Length: 221
Image (cartoon, rainbow, N blue to C red; front, side):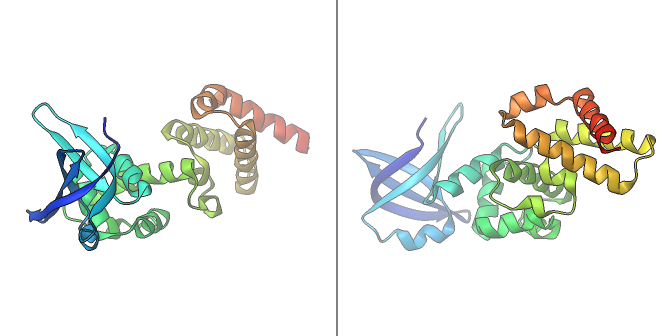
């Protein structure tokens, strides 16, 4: 799997609004699709690119990025159901990473759906999955969000657990303030555990978190 290339720019061309270059790397010519803004870099004799290599039965596709963060974000987009490489490239061609992360923070569906090929349902899925990804990597200060459950959750399973705990606490006549404080307490416990994601999900299941929540209420009385 090729992840990085440094080579001489032999040629560049535009095909169906897609920008391509041909890189000579130790005598081999690599055809790479790049973001449109990289046209300004093509006057250089050599170019260094972070590569996403997609192998298919009948071809090998290469997508190149100047910044590693762009390449890694491109990979994240491809892991979202319904997002193919061309839609991902269209998104990165139209907006910067900062603009996209701000739209995720603000849950701006109209911003995302302005990209051709991304409809409302795909936009909702993209915003949800990217928000979870950004929370894990923590590049945004999402903990400042008013929605406590969305501010912490590591994955869908935790979201469902927190939802079930909230319902249970309501049935036990907890006030909204008590529920919020309890969820904050659970969040603190999970963060302080400092475990890998897979271990967190195993340790803090619904029964475990509910027990912690109820014991915390007893200690407060």
